[in-house]
Image (cartoon, rainbow, N blue to C red; front, side, top):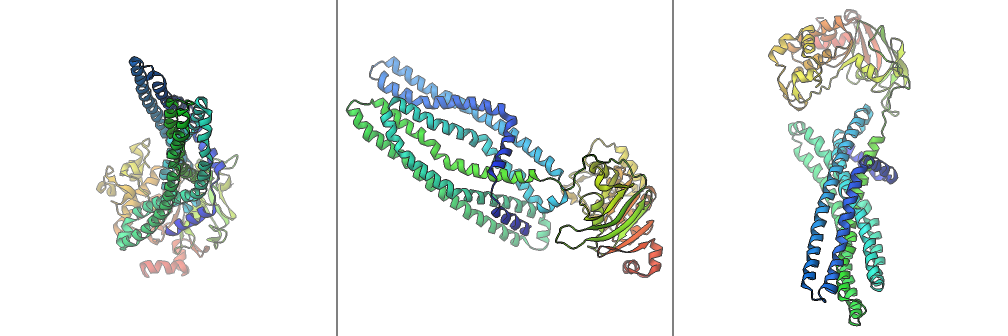
Length: 593
């Protein structure tokens, strides 16, 4: 895990955010919600107009209502000022609620889209992206985008609108004082540009480290039993502290930069007010400007610099969002290496045979060959067992058969059709797989036997149990028993029995068992051996096994060593040959065979 995290970090340092591509992705998310954003824009316009109206009402009270000594007019004007503020709050409420609803809808759609896309990606993708990092993408990165959609995007628009409209109003009432006030703008621009330049990389680093922490926690909490068993809690905590320290330092630097920017900008408010009172006050003494206009200018100063005050927050959110969006876009741009051809061949069952013809395979160009020149033919209704030492290439054969990977050389044929031309969905519907890494979902045993598909009738489950003779096992293991996450409340043998029956429930004609009987007690082994003998008579089967007792009755056994087929034949013939298979068998069972 630690190595993967380091790889991800070094990769991010080299790769710059593609703002154009990320913006296109963000726009594609916003486009279906145009109506929601349009309604929000209406509320935004109304609330902004009311916000800008308050200083004008205050000017009217000071310059018109009060000099007229008309109490009714003063009361009316003050009531209008209060009502204006109250309506501003009401419109702001509707604006916020609309943005929250729209943002939640966008996030829901994005998570659905991400999940659907990731489910279609191949195994090399999941080898590159550990579960913890993917969780960080789906949870943390989408949360960052939520901030952008619910707050920042519409607020930036409002701030820009408020900034220019405020200057327009001020210029309308007194152009000379407005031009004087605009003299501070070059300073604002210089400070903002420096802040943007210095802070952009800081915010990206903080976002990356936050994602790394999320992935670290997810992966290490999943492996808590292993960490506790080997007393590695302190080691994991130390690694997390190291990442936390890096994030703390990066975030502190970013916050210091934000505080300096904020203080520099906030200093502009008293400077601007001093300019208004100093210069404008002199004009007021000369009768060139009213007191109400001075008060209005002072009230507008806060509204004028509010957008600038929020700039640091906007930049932080925008940088986090574009960094998160870039990471999400990288996943969404990934395409599976193995896809269906333009006109795929569909199979519903195997009519004749599965053939491996001089197949060579390695997982990466720089890796050694995992299998070399493997050839065999499995006829319909027959069984093939594959044995050999760990790492010899056995599991690679099932990976190729299910098109998880493609061979570099050779061909794999089903009923004479090249597997590259066969539809992925139809291939995996016709051939069942029981893997050595067994995953059970939270739920009952019955639900897991149905692969969490309630449409599968209970009768199919009972028929599958009866067919392979495991009735006695399930008398002691209720089908209503609740399984917790990953099946941790079951033994390895119990999980393997359940996975074997689960494959039977789907009733696929061809069945591949990859080390499906590797961790079982003698009692369960006898049960599964009996079940296997029944299966061998009913199904076309490929069995990969370390425990040779489970494959004694296979029609053919091939022994793979160092990626090559070294021996082949029946169990009796291979024992009589006295080669590698015979030695393996004697190591497990002694000389009695």
